Image (cartoon, rainbow, N blue to C red; front, side, top):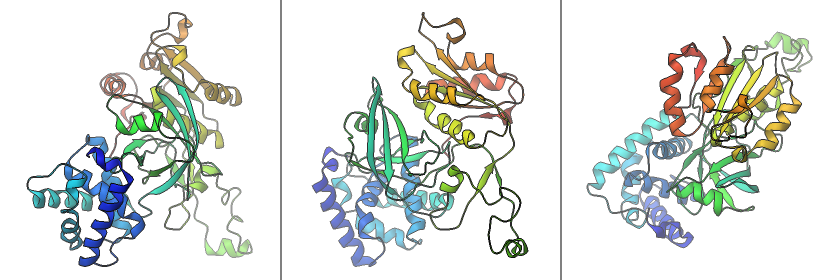
Amino acid sequence: MTGAAGDDAVIGEVAASFRAGLEAYSPGLLPERATALVVAALARLVGGGGDRAGRLALLAVLGRVHRRYRLRPEHGPLIGAALAPVAPRLCPPQVGWERRWRRAWALIERAAGRMGDGPAFWPAEVVGRDLAAEGIAILTVRPWRRLPFRPGQAVPVCVPQHPGRWRWYCPANAPRPDGTVELHVRAVPAGTVSHSLVHEVRPNDLLHLGPPVDIGLSLPTAPEPTISRQSVRAGNGRADAGPAGAGAADEWSAAARPAGGGLARAALAGGRDLLLVAGGTGLAPLRALVEQVATAPAGRRVTLIVGARTIADLYDAITLDKLDQAHPWLTVVPALSHDPFAAPAEQGDALTLALDHYRPNQHVYVCGPPAMLTIARHRLPTTEIPANHLHLPKIP
């Protein structure tokens, strides 16, 4: 996008023009409150900006917009016609607009088939900000309505400074009673969204979160046993009057209800031990898994390897120490690749130390920077870890 796209006045003018054009073609197709986010995302997609992960985040949001507002194939040309005259204010002029728009609309329709139902975005107020280390911020946000996520999922995030740019972040917590979500953000070179989140965003600012998406890091769940009508009647109409505990969902599963209504309760399947391997802010989804297991340990043991260059780079050390002290089934092991003062058992990169701690039948979850994941994808399958026990993040 051009720099002017970050100006609220420009976005307001573009959204108003887009909405006026769309209303002329099809009144009431999109609600006014969603117009600014939608037009910025559409222009970004047609403009082709961003990397693959950024485009997939865009499509997750736009696919949910398609389902949420019951868009149909015949709406594509109408939306494209309303977008064409205003898009140059948000992205460079495009050669072959109609062809590019048809391709973008086809991608949105395909994404809509994968996204399921629910809101397209959640306004979320920043309620806490901690500069945890150089270039790393821990942000606590409170969505205006509860975000139905599961630990290990990824969520698209958009900041008002860069409308149309959505980036993936994984919540670092299991769902909480107060609905807050913790995000760990590292400012990356040339990363406009991450730079704003780390250096510009302040408490009381408003962000937008997109629909949570599975990326292969969530723990398997077992469905809650079905309660028959007869058992409900026998229990005087109480849904929790069946087998012991059948009606008692823990906090994380109770929070993960579909936004469209209905109760999606699930319990963790089995009691398989876990080896969690984190690098940098890849710690976030794995810490969320630890919090999830803490609600129902079920006899499993968890080893969390936390990779960093030096002890000073362990940005979430206090929280990790509290978790380690609170749960006897949890072992937290720092992996310090460039710290000569570290204990011998803590020296080395995270993947190497993880293999030292690996035990048969553990399920291994790995999350970290791209270079670490590339090495993990080549190295770990050659070890004794079964393929169905190895879990690495992948945006669908």
